[in-house]
Each structure stands twice: as C-alpha cells, then as structure tokens.
Image 1 (cartoon, rainbow, N blue to C red):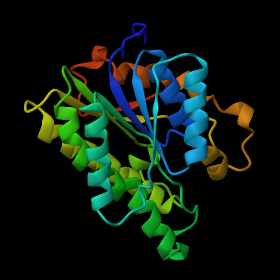
Image 2: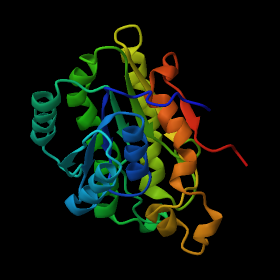
Image 3: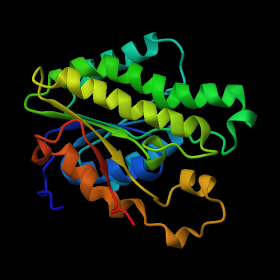
Length: 247
C-alpha cells in the first residue's frame, strides 16, 4: 500500500496514546508525512520523548497534550476540545490508539475495579473524546479521518480476555454507529484498524512467554495507518481493517 510522500502536509492530527508503542510510531509517521501532530497521553515524560523525536528530524512542530482518558467527568473533555479549537481551529484527523489491557483471567475471577477502568478508558473515554472533537473535524477544510483501534478479540470473543475483549466489541460498535451517522452528512470518514501482533509493552503483558523477536515492530504496520489518515482513503468508511495479513 503506497501512500504519497507529504500526503498529510498542512494537516493537524491528534494521536492518543502517543507516548509509547504504536501511538509514538504513528505520530512520527504522520509528522514525516507533513502533519502537525497533537500528542495526547497520560504520561508527560513519554509525550515529551515523542516530541523530541519529531523535533530531532526537523518535522512540523508537535504539541503535547497530557490527558487521562480515565475521567468520569465530561467537562475535561469539553475543555480539551476548546483548547484545541483555540490553538489550531480544526482537526483533520484523530487516531484513537490509547487503551489498556486489564487482566487476563476468567470472568468469574475478574476484578470489578479493573473492569471499570478498562471500560472507562477503552470505551467511555473514547466516546467522550469524539463527542467533543467531532465539531473540530467538521471544520476541516477538506476531508477528515477518524481511526479507532480494534482487535481480533473484539470480533470474536476469546476466553480469559475479559474486559479488553468486550471493550473492543464496543469499539467496533461505536465506529459503526458513528460512521452511519456521518455518512452523507459530513466529509469525515471513520474506520477501525486491527494492528495485529505488534512489538509493544501491551503485547508483552498479554503474551509474557513470547519472544519479542517473533513479533513485528510497529513501523511495519504503518502503511495502513498512513493510508487511512491521508486523502487517498476517501471513500473507505465504516470498515474494520487489518494492518497485517491473516496467517
């Protein structure tokens, strides 16, 4: 999948979970394609590291937005959108990459507070964020793209994946509802990416016995992330796509 160099020039794109793993790699990929990237995540130090990587390559200056999706009050989400509006005026894209794994155990043994946390970050926080960012995406000069992050366990339930699996089913549903609501009413396209097995800390936590060398690095799956964020994907809407071929 070839996407033109500088395909995101002049665009402003928000990436959640931009301090680590796939989020950091995607932020760098978008910056290299010409985008101004807004780096959102819980850990300021990690976001600063991503910012420094972008600066080191003399790419368009990024912005650091420390923000915790595990918030039960809607007001911080509204204030975040207001801050972005005041400083950037609109958004051309959002990559919803942030998420937590929770426990790998049976439902019978699942901790209530952990379940609440996973659902809050992976589902409720994503909803609240998009509720308040959609007006900024509607203001995009041309087209805009939203990418949710799904998983194979969000398409077919798998034992012992608990809240994470359920949250990804919800992510697929949220994407589909949003895609239908925006179809023929906006220039915003909405899709899901299943990154597949990727060398991240979450993967290591989920599969502690797996040797990292057997798992591809995040930069190998970036072609789909770049394609869906670029104007070349106009017309792709309401789809759940795999970043890696099925084995």
